[in-house]
Length: 180
Image (cartoon, rainbow, N blue to C red; front, side, top):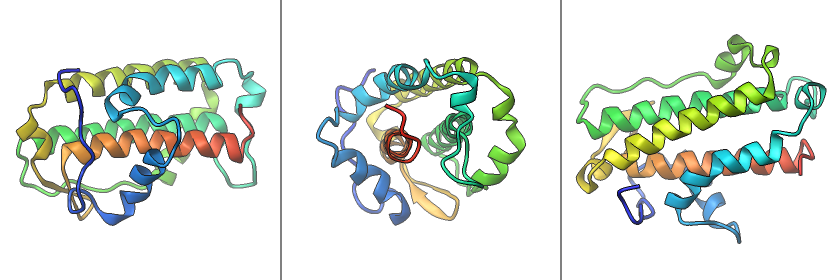
């Protein structure tokens, strides 16, 4: 990555709702600098979930909850959406960007019909594209402000949210799905 360190965003660079992703990531004793985490999370997720059988990856810890494959699919969708938000804001888009209904996306995606291997490969590919995008952004680009889902964001904050979002779901996979 071109940036040696993408510093932690300040309040006002993201809606308060997303603070939990950032602080949950920072509170981990094994938290890497966000730049390193951005580079390693796809491989870490693959190492964690790549050995699951199709039956195991279809596990839901409760009725109405997402399967493990659907969790990975959700990560893919969010990565794409937030990377697009970062791009639009970095390029100076003045139009507000829409929100999305994560449950409707998962319900309509057919993630459970796919293999875990294909989902992990897709996540790695999408993350690689995010890394390329982030690497191309200047410091000024990272600090530009824009509106998405009725909140103010900077691309710098979006990078932190992406890393924190994956860390959040990895913790959920460990705690509720009992994936090691």
